[in-house]
Image (tube, rainbow, N blue to C red):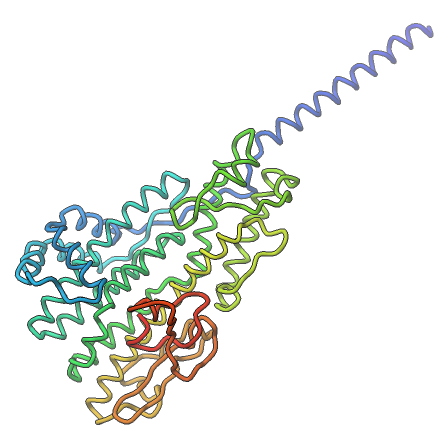
Length: 429
């Protein structure tokens, strides 16, 4: 009897051991096949028709690219178009169909399909760089109008370029936003020279259009959120290897090159494991997006001891944020300057206060993106005026423009995260 009980007890022990081992195997298999992220990386809907498709088709039939490129590089040096203006006019004429196709896209919303993974980013970067030629073509067309003193036509081309540049960041991470900023800056580089040549009616119409285009600006928080999802998709691929902690900390390149970030060399992400590192990195980027509501907090953010980012990445984000907010300020000040031109021609001098422009000349006063919901600063000076944004330091310097004397030419007035002074309309590009 006792022997039978002993055999039964031993069998039960072995069965229990087997069940424990099987349980551990099931647990390990579940962990092995558990997704690295608690939620799948989302995508966003793309409209149909999509203005992006029209832009890419227009790029595909672009002609006389060498003339367009040459005229752009003359402009970058602060010079007028090259002497062979006839070639420039011929290039614009040869691209009439291209310009028509580009402008057809303005009738539709523009959204970049979700960019997920390194290869998708590489492809998108090449597309965005190609689109620069279309912005340069619009600027060349504006020059042809300027040569005939058709200032209203030139301003219309500049505003077309503004619309084009504002479309690109929709649905894009930081690199796409940066390209959109470059396209917009290309379009508006000469727009300030046209403002003073417009009559009252032309200035009113241009102000109304420029003001409406401000509604197409993409919030910086949306750009940073899209950046988070593409980076997570990149990092999921990056850490799907036996030496994931090496890839995560070393084998990456700069965000502005269209690739992933370098994470902080501290050991926190190694202790947390793959999923812990991704969760912590997603939380860090969510915090970055929340900071976008307060520009000063984002522009001058310093990572904490346990933030999984390199200082170089923080610097690049700050530069992108400064460029994004600077271009929003330029767009808003241009709309305001056009309204001021119309008012001045109709009343003989600029208004005493900007609020007098609403609602007759502007639907609303544009906000200064560096001043958290406050309007631009303004002062009437004799027959003219000074219009400015407080700039990256958030301090009102009374219209004293950013001027870095360590640099030369237009670079003296470029806006950087560390710039001191104000962004003055028509002075700081």
